[in-house]
Length: 117
Length: 110
Image (cartoon, rainbow over all chains, first blue to last red; front, side, top):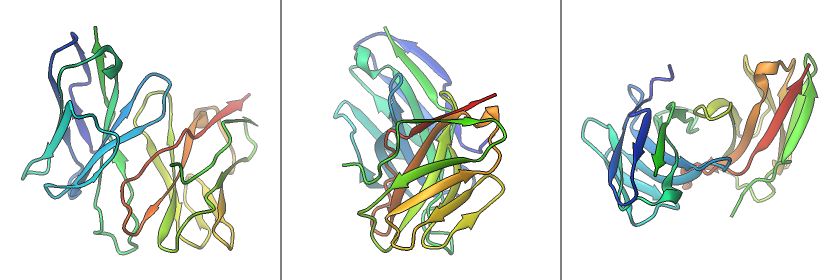
């Protein structure tokens, strides 16, 4: 158990639907990252939040949105789902600047597997 | 705009050292080199990171060249459980969005 909790583990839905993926970061971590990994593909960075504020944006579609709440958990909302959105979605957390070394080590959750039929 | 270059795949015999290279010729002075690995659809796992000096922990060693343009991850005694995709990432300073490339698929063979 990495300390990063993602729910649900598996989700099957239909095209056109909307889903919400949830992430609880490791205790003490202020930053949350979201990644998408399609079948046999690399990890695509979607978005990063730090203490409730958006910090960096990657290849996130307009149909996708995310937020980080005051308790630091984060949600990734995927709407108007398409077959191509089927993927593993990973959340990671980090202290982000809290370490003396200035490094930023990410701890990943186990992922949420989304299947769009 | 990949900041690192890694071989697509490598094989290693069980019990031998696995040496995984990474080129990062455009690395800037305040950027770290990080290594993660992903074992078949599991969440990526942090291995090690470094800035200038060589680093060692219970999992691996990281050798960074003096000009910092390349590095090598060393798994001293590879086991079958080390079969995974290994990602080399450069990140730091004003850039904290950690972007993964294609990585190196390491296969440890009996």
